[in-house]
Image (cartoon, rainbow over all chains, first blue to last red; front, side, top):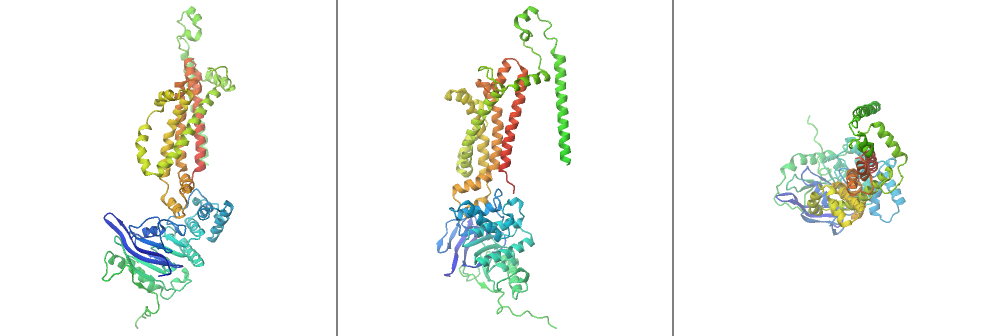
Length: 289
Length: 283
């Protein structure tokens, strides 16, 4: 695991009388896109907050770039579920605020220029002077994405970033993120409960059982070739096996596996499966005549 | 369109009510005012002068008399004819200056302190009992202590204004700061914005509308209290002027003072309202 940018080592979140999750081990490699999928209540957001440094784990550590983290960092930018834009600032000022934290010595003019450029990257050059209240939900989240990417983080953390958007906007933004992340070879970690979103974006999909006492049950390796786009994703060979596998997990196994530790279970070596890999999936049986 | 019609109709109704009120006042003052002095001994009346001879019962002024007196006062509002005889504009300016001084002093104390209280739950809990006990005290109750320690009546009234306007600003600032959205603070944290930068760029703008609401309440209270404070300490100011005119038994002047105090209070409130709109934000 020499390539791991982030290494999560045995983190847990406990409250008096309740363990949300514990003994969580996984890593995110440089340039890799990892999605965490699970039902509400399994502590997904807590995992992300711990990675961001906003919360401390009850147990365990997170190693980033060889160093144990102790708090938030500009190297790990967060795209929040609610866009979390400051409503008193224009789109440009919101991005410029982030930039001014990254580059305290930059003069105002340079910050504005860079903010404008970041907004143009997400197709919002025309809305730079608008306040969040004047923007649609999708545009607000675009500003959030521009703000996160403008500071050139080493890693992007996303907490269900598109869950509050309508399906059409969500699709457009997923492709946008896919494009931006691929362009920059960005390391990314995202929480979602949208299976298609995970299949479109992720290299690996981490599946968590239901809480309390949630744990990482399985790592699904997404072998669908890149570039993927939403229009053709469901025509790709292996897509349905992958999707069915994850859905089966979410519908039944996340519940049946919850709280139980199978014999010989090693939380440090969670089983990896490749449902979409051609050598594993048998050719679909044709209807017998 | 329909709201403009309603506004016009409301204004018309307001004017009609005002006219009816003033008309009724004028009529009743005219019919009830005469007859008081008929039984007086004319020699006694000649000795004391007409007003006093009526046994202090000057008739309640009619709106027309008040209007004439108002014109007289407003025509030359800034004259100074001695310490006890200064124009109404000067008196209002004294009061406004005291309110401004006490209010700004209070803002300078309450906003930073409220910020600290809002940011620190410990400080908030520790100071809360003091605030809760001191807040309901009438600011005038502080006047003797102020006079004793400061030994200057004018500064004492500024202190009273300070005391009464400090609480709403303090509590509103603390509330606004402590209810800053967690997600905005998290944004600042993930961006590694320093404490000062977070306070200045995130918390202050987030809390600004709440702080302005506190300031608006404060200035209203300050303007209420200054009249009473000046009645107590005397010397100058619109409150003192009201009391002076009471001693002169010129009720018309008192009615005028009430009207002017109301108008100035309205203007102060509007001024803060404009400021509040400037810092307001919508989600």
